[in-house]
Length: 473
Ligand code: NAD
Image (cartoon, rainbow, N blue to C red; front, side, top):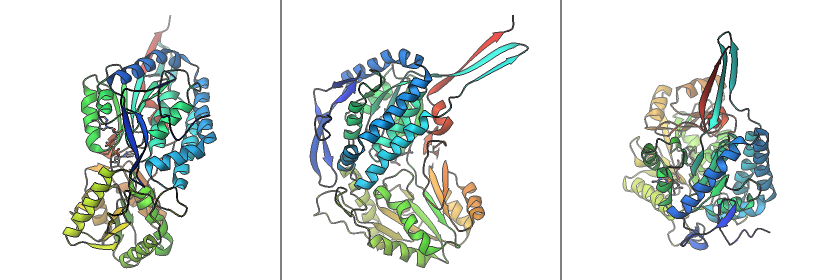
């Protein structure tokens, strides 16, 4: 019987592993340490990489139907343990339990959907002979993930890597290692030893992965600044990289929307998970004809949303996940205040409250160069901006170095789709937040990333093409 509240060990070569040192893990709703995890260094990483390298030839040669079955087994394990895993996820990540259940539910769905995906490959036969094109696995993959969606974002890497025949070393964020470690434990004996290794450690561990000579690829999700360091670190051994980085997603609201109908979904597009979603709406451009009505409706809705401990009934938004992020978001609010910007809601952080709680903060039509507009808040702070001319709104939405997602809100699908075509981002959603799915590529333009996850592109990213030509006779 798995104990979900203590005894957090790494999984190396299918077995429990510890390290000489440990790292504390805090509950962001209480700011108290509630667990300890192994703090892996070079020695533990070497063991994990060696185990993955030993497992690689066997796993790559395993019939694909068995690899598909392994993905379905992951889905089943997550489903069987969804209640305790979700509770643990809320305790370490902070979000309401219903949202944690949503992440674990999506994980199962993703595993099942990926298990059914067609693998690329082709064979042609002509007068000159046969040409076989295969997409062969790379070897050992290092997966590095952030703290906002620890499990689902890991799965964006684990599932395609395993299906295409690679083995893995997964490193969760030091802020949210617990659910990943327990999942690694639950999968011991389900996957062959060494196929999936899960190690925990501090920020020193990431660079060790990117530098490791026996890792063939780094799949990284996190901030743009760290992504650049990962790319530089990977260059020495010419590792393949997939980089899923930060964004500053704009929503453009056309004047024909039904204000009363869209206020609620627009609010959640921006504030779900307390704004800590890479494709959360981070700036809203609202046509001047409806600006006053829509901004009032958003502020009204915001006032009814309970911010609290994710394990408490009625909580709709949890705390910000960690102190560093809490301080960053507070600094952004302080800057808005110092510059005389107007808050429609929020703006006052109760510092006496334990935990990293920030009230829902909506800023009324700040200038385009305000920090709250230019920077990715990654917290519950949102600027509303007024526009008159759609060309101007599109130009302002695109006037950024990042291009992850975006959305257009309208009652006219054709008009909205025409605006969507003009946004310089990897994903655009009409009447909702940009959101990934297992079947379509998800990736950033500009400095939001390199490559894509999910869909056929996500599978190809874990392979090298290999062409074998066999002449006639
Ligand atoms: P972060 O870049 O600080 O950390 C991400 C991971 O990288 C962590 O596991 C961390 O330990 C590790 N790391 C830190 N320094 C490293 C280094 N030098 N080399 C290798 N690894 C290192 O990001 P974060 O604060 O955890 O996450 C928030 C950011 O992630 C936001 O910018 C958000 O937009 C972005 N994000 C992007 C996506 C996407 O799919 N594009 C999804 C979620 C989050």
